[in-house]
Image (cartoon, rainbow, N blue to C red; front, top):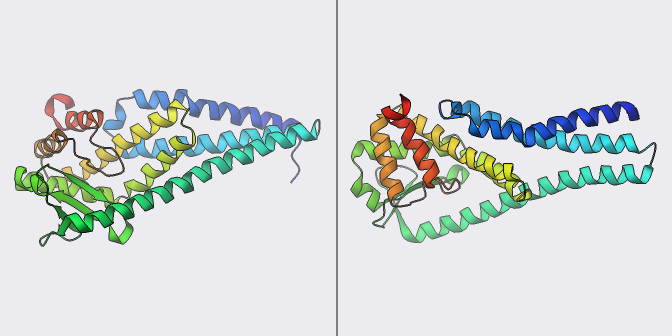
Length: 264
């Protein structure tokens, strides 16, 4: 397929504009919007579209710019195309490295759990940690995924609150939130100097918590879930092992949307 230099230049400019918009103003507007807390599923899809479209448009713009330069300066055009290939390799390499690191970390974590926990006789794929601190989190490992609950949590929560916490954690597993989180972690790792990458990872971490809360809300009262969240977060326990979900900002957003004052 032959691309005319003039057409390539125009297309590069258009894609460059799209990449710039998706890199700065669009993510900022989305992060500042209030509607995502009421529609976390749509907001999560939108963040994924922004990330993917932004990456492809950036690489495409650089590639087309190189093609436009080739007829005039073969060396410079080749260098620019090489930059596009290098950027694509950089992003994919960080994705592969992040996935490998997460898999290894989860394997080590699971081995440690084998030593420190015992199976819950009443709940499948659930491990009990003999610790006084109220802890609840899930460890995604495909068919070997488990939910971890501490003795402190079982002692402090009412049956309804405990059911809400378990429903929340299992929603993380069934909806595979870990895959989305790993992808955005890789984006941030590949572009640590890019502030929007860090902001996107933070916003996505909030949204997956809200999605899991919405699943729990189908079978429990909002007030019950809010109390359970407050109990777990008061001990600074990690709610989802890959999300950093016990951060004050995430806890605040979760509790606020569950209280009548926040919804009014």
